[in-house]
Image (tube, rainbow, N blue to C red):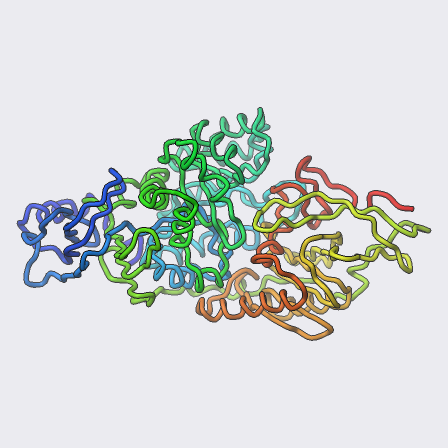
Amino acid sequence: MSEIAFPSWPDVAPQLINVAAGRAPADTVVRGGIWVNVHTREVLDHHDIAIKSGRIAYVGPDASACIGPETKIIEAKGRYMIPGLCDGHMHIESGMLTPAEFARAVIPHGTTTMFTDPHEIANVLGLEGVRLMHDEALMQPVNIFTQMPSCAPSAPGLETTGFEITPEDVAEAMSWPGIIGLGEMMNFPGVANADPKMLAEIAATQRAGKTVGGHYASPDLGPDFAAYVAGGPADDHEGTCEADAIARVRQGMRSMMRLGSAWYDVESQITAITEKGLDPRNFILCTDDCHSGTLVNDGHMNRVVRHAIACGCDPLIALQMATINTATHFGLERDLGSLTPGRRADIILTSDLTTLPIEMVIGRGKIIAEDGEIKVDCPHLDWPEHARGTVHLGHTLNAKNFEISAPDGATSVTANVIGVVENQAPTKALQADLAVKDGLVEPTQDICQIALVERHRGTGGVTNAFVSGFGYQGKMAMASTVAHDSHHMIVVGTDHEQMALAANRLGDVGGGVTLFKDGAEQALVELPIAGLMSDSPATEVAAKAEALGAAMRACGCDLNNAYMQHSLLALVVIPELRISDLGLIDVRTFKKINVIEASE
């Protein structure tokens, strides 16, 4: 059943009324469960749920009047009945999977609704890429709503993307059936300075009556933050501390607290609720970025809810932040987010509200997963061939493309270095003294070389700089065509020859992630669709991603989910330092800076 074909509440209201009144039989009754009511924050024993046409008709202590000869009975056996979980902000592409395979991976974990921003593919394929993601999302047995990307490029003038998104594109997308709003407005300086293009995109969204997503990555909560909020973004997921969360909700935004594969921002912000006692209605849980290994092995929104509970949050409040709060934010409270009449029958059966085992998942009234096994098909779109041929290097790269020359006569240099911060998206702006040998700057100790290789137009351009924090040792290099958000190619390595090998390998396979050591490939994750995703099963992609992680650790990197850190090093809207095809960018000032600061 597709999203387009799924009946609206008005379409089936007479059926729901007749079932609730006992005048007609339900399609399905979930019997004998504990009703978790997220509207009232109550746990009510001995309740039944009657379902008709994929929606809830009745919830109460006795649904026997709704049962007919053909009614399917699902015995809850005293388990808790909770709403299907909602992810308020996420990027499917970060899972390395297509929407169909992403859905297949998360359904057994209880995720039945996702609010997705496909700005990764927008940077590679433009509006067509968004439409392809949107169309495949509508084919799935769960609810995948699409936010129209707002910022491609994310920072105009500081990077070059494969395509640009315009206000006209945004206005067109607002008429598509699965578009729920505008994706995260990452160009926060543009909004704060009343950039006409950014305001036109926001205006087109608001005229359509839809939600504007936010992304305010600066720690400055002064006039620029106030100006950003005044510009219209309704939520933000870039907070990293309690003060960030409080500032957002005080200004009428929703604070989205994320736990992704590498972003651990719930624990540091949830104290706004658990210790400061703020009203939890304006807080939402989300993942932002989860790679396939996390999805297959650890979970999705169930993982986030468990984590929030482990951080001291009341289980019922944690569930509200992953269900009704999210639905209300996007204007869908009457359609999903709770187990109440008229809503989509998205239900989880679980025996414990703290550890949250996902024992049965019902989506739109049908059993879609049980005991970790998916029970439905997740249809695939027929992706066009040009979506699979997006890596254009222009020429075969060699070691010289990755050399950083020192000023004439220099014996050492002071370099600006990107500093990776474990489990957080922001980086640090560092400086280091580096030696010079044969006219070339040499990385030392924990400082590797980083390069961004242009891959959209085949210019052959390579930007080189330095990065610290990965801990790599020996002669190695890792390359990825997932390079948020411009999605050129990021190569990090200790040896120029290995960097060339890794980059050329991704040109040959059409995109993905690879790691080379001592001239031999140690791991490869092929991502042929836009250089971002695979339409192979999630378990296969996860296994390759796990092998990549093992190869990184074998090269000396022990950062948690270091691949996610690698892939964000080109995101020129998150402080402090990033790399782009135009150079090294100081995101505190939104200006290009020199790689070599001084020399001796």
